[in-house]
Image 1 (cartoon, rainbow, N blue to C red):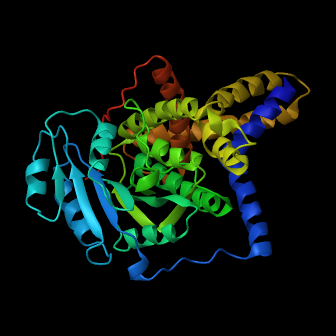
Image 2 (tube, rainbow, N blue to C red):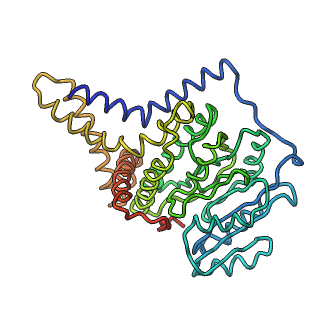
Image 3 (cartoon, rainbow, N blue to C red):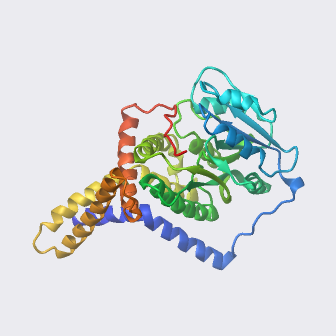
Length: 391
C-alpha cells in the first residue's frame, strides 16, 4: 500500500511540477554547454508568402474587430492573404465580412463542423505558409512576422503562437485560474521548444508549412493538436514563438470553462489513441519523452491517481503508528478545503484569488475524468459547442 501511494504521488508530482523542473534543469545545462539559441531575424524579402485562415461560426460579436485586427498586422506588402470561412453561420457574420473586399470569404449554408471548414479552406490556400487563428482572439501587430521568420529553418514544420488570457482586477475563478494555467503552460512550451519540439499547438494561433499539411479525420475533436502533431510525426519540429500571441477573454464563468475543458479532455483521449506511434521512443526518442510527460499523463492516469492517493492516505493515516501519513492527510484535506472554499466563494461572487488556483486545479482534473467518460460513451461530437466568453 505504501509503495503504491508513493509511486502514485510521484507520478502526480511529476505530471504537474516535476516535468517542468526537469525541463528547466536540462535547458539550463544545455545553455551552459551550447549557449542560448540565437534569435532568427530574416529580412523582409526572405519572409515567405502566407495565408491567414479564420474559421468563424456565428461570431457577429467579434468578427468585425477581428478583421480590423488582421488588417493591421505587419507583414511585407503583397505577401499576406486573408481567408475567412463561415460555413453554417446563421447570424450577421457573413454580411459583416462582405464589407471587406481584402478578405476572401468562403461560405456555404451547411454546417459540417470546424475541421470540415478548415479542410475546405485549405483547398484555396496556395501560399508556402498558412496561419490559423480563432475568430474571437486578437493578435499582436508583429505576430505573423515573428511566426514566419522561423521557416528559414528547414527542420521547422509548424510554429505555435502563445495564448494569453485577458484578466482584470475583478477576475473570477475562470479568468484567474485559466490565466495562471496558461502562463505555466507557456513556460513549459518555451522549454519544450528549446529542447526539441512543442507537443501540439493551440488553435488560437498556430501555423504550418502548406506542403506538410495533412487532413485529419472528420470526427477529430482537437483538430489543431492533431494537425500539428501529424507534422511532428513526419520528422519536423514544432517551434514555440511567445512573441506571436493571441489575446482572448476568459470563459464567461467556471461552468463555461468546464464545458471547454471536458471537450479538450475527450479530444485528448481520442488523440492518444490515434498517435500510438509516438509511444515508440526508439523512433521518436525526445518527442516521445515530451509527449508522454506533457500530455499523456495529464489526459489519462493522473486524475485517477489523485483519487487513489487520497484513499490510500486515509487508510495509511488510520494506522496508529503512521504519524507521517496523518500529516500528509492534513495537508491534502487542507488543499481540497481551499478548493471547496474557492467554489463557495465563486458561487457567492466573492473574489479571493488565492483560492482560485486549488479550485481551478480540481476543476481541470474533474474535467479530464468527465472527458474520458464522454469519449468512451461516444457522447462527444466533433462539432464545437462554443463556451461563452466574457465580452
